[in-house]
Length: 359
Image (cartoon, rainbow, N blue to C red; front, side):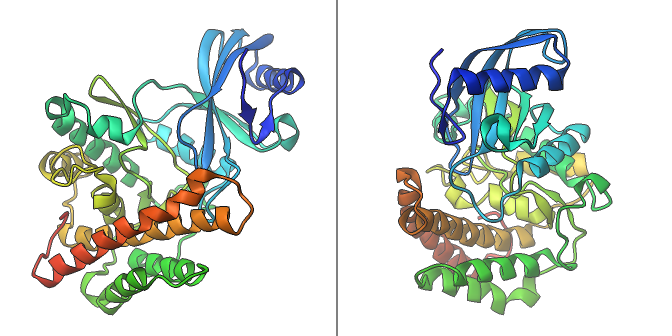
């Protein structure tokens, strides 16, 4: 079996046997073998490993595939622990959201060296550039946007009364105020000044009275974008990567999905570079029974560009100053100028009279 590294350490038969034994016990199998394993693409913040198993009884009876999700060597401060992300997956699954079924949680560091959880394997294409460059995108893009709208509305149906998510902070009544404060603290924590980001953040803060709203906080994915869902035969199969989820204004998720930085060159297709807004909006509003506040969305688009630029710069600093030897992290900061250009374009559009998003 060809196995690379798992959680930053070279995998070996002893460690794999330990994992297989733990999975057998936790899943109720009389015996469980790991017969294949490889690291899935992506994973700058978390790692996902595809594991082929053969189980005698229990949850995974028979031959099949699962995914082990654990921490990558690098991380982002605002991301959740694996136990918290597992709880989020359980909640989303119970709410009818298309996610991989969460199966087992392990908080024992001695098994593979770091906490992890096991979930079902879902097939599909997850690389955003492949989805947005699919030659048949015109045939399925609008339908996929509708599916995304329905799934997002199901996430937003989860309220702050969900006891299983009590670990999620609830900072005041206004999500915009809380997010701008978080961005300000993160920006101030960077090693070097970022004048364009500073200008964009100041611009939002100066106009806060014009766009903040007291919308009820709902569960938001907070990284709902192309690249964080799987598509097969033009259909949505699963939403991925819940490590940033939290209580927020639902307009944040919509602004994030529609931010230009997630369109991958398809700038006219505002829903993640996949389709226009109409089908998404219709499906979201039908599922949620609410009307999207498009005036708020355009401001949240600007918040998205600021937030992602800061995250990219934070990841670069981990490589440059934090001792994390990763070319991917080192290069991530070079994406920030693209977001800065998007920030200035959004500000210009709003100052020229654009009142509603997405733009």
